[in-house]
Image (cartoon, rainbow, N blue to C red; front, top):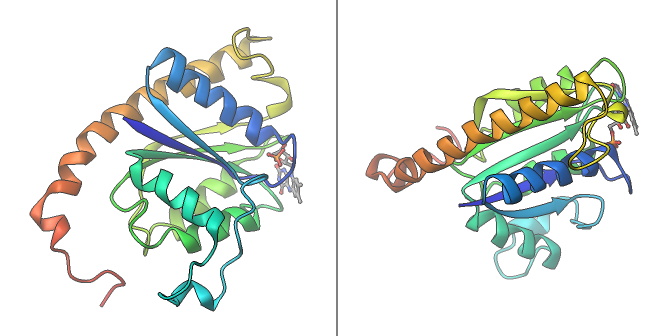
Length: 202
Ligand SMILES: Cc1cc2nc3c(=O)[nH]c(=O)nc-3n(C[C@H](O)[C@H](O)[C@H](O)COP(=O)(O)O)c2cc1C
């Protein structure tokens, strides 16, 4: 199966991309899955404007590339840093773009990232606001990585007990996501889902 990891920070050398690369390593090397990493610090995705609704022009070639990878994916991992108690603007923008079926009825795992003792706000914001028109399906499991600077600094070697536990938590959560990804293929193929006629509410 194929997985997309969205690294939600636009900072170069962010902690989110460090975490995303670790998730990619576990999915590929330990679980044998295929991964596309969408790094919002490099993808240079255009911010939403009204040309998004114009069917006669390409909205953004960078989005066209990402969109294809997302369409091919069976599940999505959102790595979301906490910025001012929110997700970053580029990650919010991603959810304004991914409303044309790219992540529809696909399971999602949230991994939030904080340099301090925080990290809850990205989870609540994503779960509350980003699923309606995307039809993205967050699984109940999520991971909060607090004091992110002290963990996951080496792909294979853990530095301390917290580092060891967070690695176990990430791997266990990914194994659960793999099961959801398998099960959701039959949901997407069902007549009830295919024939649903209210794509934007009533
Ligand atoms: C603009 C900005 C605002 C931030 N606000 C918060 C915050 O509200 N809570 C928090 O725990 N960390 C905050 N941080 C620190 C991030 O948690 C820290 O940068 C962490 O490494 C995750 O972000 P990154 O992936 O961009 O590195 C903020 C960072 C930035 C750049």
